Image (cartoon, rainbow, N blue to C red; front, side):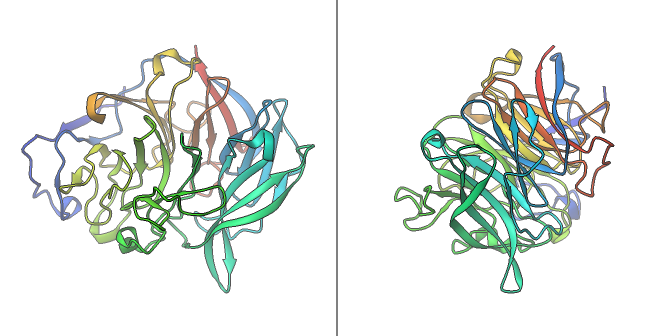
Length: 388
């Protein structure tokens, strides 16, 4: 087991004079666990990893369809289909993307009424008028499942950059679209209510801002995010969010964090980071001094790994593992542990997507061929995790 040193911030802690890397404009949040060395204790639940598909190039997102098929996005601009457990050779769609840095074809989600309308939604980076932007687009899958057509642009002109493009797309329990965006390298955007960057956006399937959003006419649901790729619902009104920490901005590094939030919350970036918060902001649950950072997250409710039921599962990129977080009353941390650490074949390497499949298993994708990992001969993979 890797040695780990952690510090539970005292209820009365009001800051820290620990040097430039710890300086910020907020106070330490009561109850936030700051992991100062490593990422956590080794996981104790026996699990087994099964390969579903290999030979992919940065499979960013998964969308499960009725009947068992799965749509997969590859960052260079391909929507692929898993049919009968096999990867169909020809893409369902090819999307013209700008794939420099962290951009490209990113998140995907299937419409809750897919059986009726065959719609799915993708978020990608593309060139427009000489600059890169991120957009959300609705597609329609052909009846044979082998091709798709672009139907409608729902969201456009979200600023893009080499880093911090966000990109996760999920349907909430309310049947509405939630889209995570990044600050695109300009931290003040996260606090600008007029900017879609550094936010979690909530939209109808036609791209409109729902009338019950926190601010009428605005798609912004949560603000103060640096680069969110990981979020899911604890219940119909409460989200858990894993956000990227800084990588040099304002003299800060690391400190990726997990928070619990509800509609209209300001999560504080760039005014606070790590275990810090301000009055009126959600208190972080856990933060790591060393950069993790999170790729995807899921609140697990399946039966394939019974001991994980109710846990928050977070895939990490730089630290190359699957993280299990158990929350207690009020969203406070009860425990956390690390699984499948390291590069293949011992570990998973860089974990991009984490989602529960309709089979009750945990499905993950790897991002080892994105230029930051060690790309194996089999390239990137889609995997299932079940109990052993």
